[in-house]
Image 1 (spheres, rainbow, N blue to C red):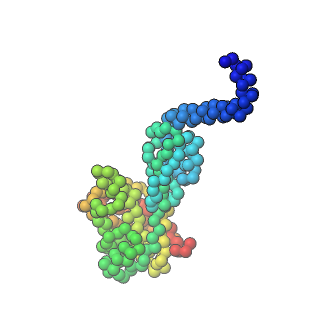
Image 2: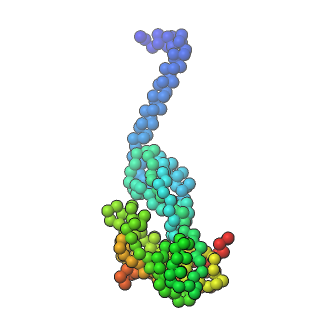
Image 3: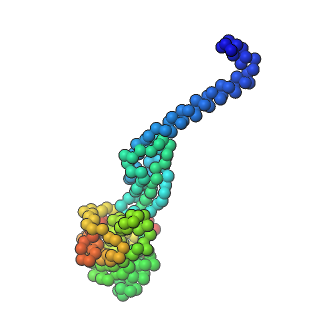
Length: 257
């Protein structure tokens, strides 16, 4: 059938012509989507970005984000991405999702006053408050404190860090040291009931791995405590060897602020 005859036929059957054109258009759109979806996209670095900004950033590159979990992180502000899978530089098909984990920020714990209490009573009070220290074994005024953290295989973080090779994350070692430092700083009566907000971490070093069965001895020594700003040197040891150390700066604020 010649083209003029086809056009004449379509003109006489307008509805059929419209349906045919719509079918051709839909086929073209589908073909385009298949072509676009089959292209490889380089995965960008998302760590440290605010989740909302990262979502837009990834969308501009033809990727989606899927939040796999949220966790407290003393070094990363809330709503920022702390980890991603696949890593930056890997490739994904367009419109696939990058899995991300988002920070809840530092864990906020109101440390109860334990001045004058026995080590056993102090440990119970700290456990009830959510402070990750198994035992407070030494307190010297507001100058020095030492605590014990027993690392057991039952810890939840060992399930994925790492499969078949459990290692205590460095950020959790820092968290434990920071919490012990908070106990030390809030020993003064005028600081009782306050919250020690982490301001900065300096001179952070992770010197050896910590595995199930290890016992961490945590130590915190006050370097400076003036007004609402404090600076504490902390370290964690296993069998007398330094596993982690950091210089931590805090701001002490009222719980209602």
